[in-house]
Length: 289
Image (cartoon, rainbow, N blue to C red; front, side):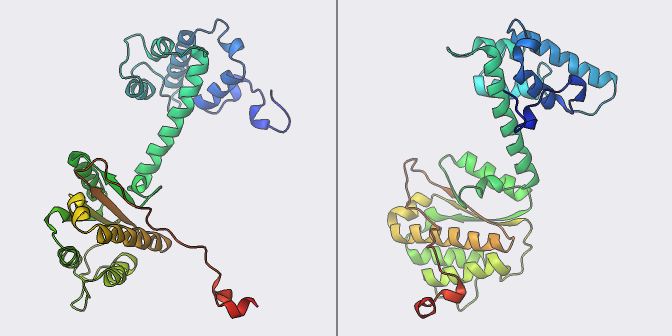
């Protein structure tokens, strides 16, 4: 029920609406007034008329509800198929028990708008889908792994591809990463040294002065092979990468790790965990007494 505390729910005249979503929000408030029979096809017809009016008056307002338009295409991916009658008929046919087609439309509309916002964000910020929840992402199918690496490369990331299936020892891993990232001769070929040198690369720039582009991607194939031979090292490597990626992000630099495993059930312990720390001025126990 609209209240003074929720001005966004105040009823507007349709002429005061700023775009199609504002218009739909007005309908959502009083569906019985706009769609008295509860027919979603009437709403579809109304939105087709809305889009025609936009064209007649040369108004630039993206409207995705034309049959076969963006909303129909998105709906088809969710439902698995679409009909020639348009999105209204598809929703009516798939409305679950306990709901109505109009209610189902607005539920789907919210999801569609959320997905569209996410798509726009990934367009503006390439690679964010591999950083928003974790800096290390697992893949099973090599085709998907390759597509992800290729997309990041096309977005100007520097992609380092590493074949972990060729590693039989931890030293093989160190040699491969050191060569790929051109670590200095004093690299110690141990996990502490990996942490130090990788931190230099991702936070301050590569030792080889290679173009940095949008960020750095470490893409490991057949990582399950290495994890089976050197389980502790395989876990610690991912932990180091996650920790360095977080530190790089503070400096507005980006590190992404893609892991391909032929074992679809592979599991790793949580990575990149950090403790709750005292501030620098009170880090010493003596300064808190």
